[in-house]
Length: 190
Image (spheres, one colour):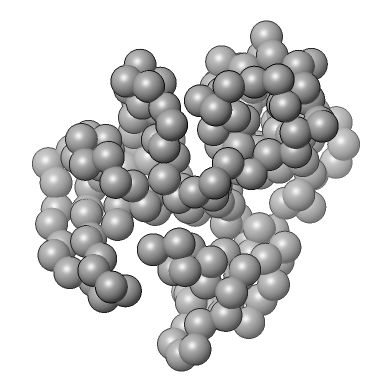
């Protein structure tokens, strides 16, 4: 599943096939070009810059897409921090924060780029029940507002709460597919 995300995001090239984003073949494009086209991701292992503050980590996402002037990136950073409840931690170094908060910082960096497609690799790993509940509500709202969310997650309860379509994978092959009754957005899970 992580290899699939690596191929979709451009970190790895597929051996065969094509990757289409809004009908455009992006198979050979590097990661930064895919980001500029509106593709963002998080990782199974938390990937933040520990020496930077929460605000600086999120701002990197706003700037990474390469579509924003500095003032607009600052506004996107502020909006994203507020959305995730991280505004009060803006100036705190990431290294001093617990894992659940770091997951939100990483998600914030991805969301600050204003993506059209969001790839989430095990976003609930290490979260407690309350944090997972907040994550579920947030992801449903984002999908309901038109963000396409592709989620790799082992927490079946979370998947059932947020995914419109669920694909299972076994040894790299797609297995069962089911549509859920959640509705309202564009989200899928594997």
